[in-house]
Image (tube, rainbow, N blue to C red):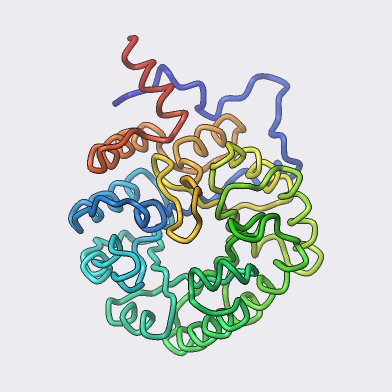
Length: 325
């Protein structure tokens, strides 16, 4: 599909306009594509490994520099990720692209190492209830388990990315106080994570709560160590990302076609759609090196496999423009 003449979002800016965020001299944002893992994990229709691999390879071809490819969790709890070994071993890795997998425990790490993983992601949450639902233990105990994974990964010289879930709200405990979030992020970074992605797991955050959280975090953590991972349950994801950009965050997670959700967060909808994020960033004049036309094709491809419509608003609008021409 070619939308060269149709997209309003090609990085051209109206004369006299400038990006909304103040650090305009830093004109590049890195997108971390999580569709193949976080996007698919909650889908009931099992997707064949070959389709997942095609999805990943096409996302890389579209210019995405970092891909969350799999999760080494038990297939008993997340059946969609039961083929993690096949996916990781089947990757046709492109130089310069980072591929990583979510690892919940030391056993998962060992399996990831056996598959040749060079980078992993670990997770924590300040929410006691979410931790008990997700990891069957307290948040502090879950963090201790994560520390063991980090220590073991460092021995294998594996890069480690951290996730902190429910940073703006919990499905069981409600709004999250930033004072509860900060220590978890600090501990992940102190232990060896190169950055922490802030997960608005249920998409309940607003620009106001995102601003409050980032102000609290920046008091002790360099903003270069932070990324954002916004779900779009309440339609706030792009607004929250804009606030993060204003604060100097330059790494943003997203999912093709807005796929996603969480097995342990009832009611949570998908991640911010990669198509919507790229459309917005292009309109701000921010470089991503990601091809929006290719993203639209990829979104159609995976949604056809899932027998569901895209959740990307930009894709829906641009598809309609194509049909009218």
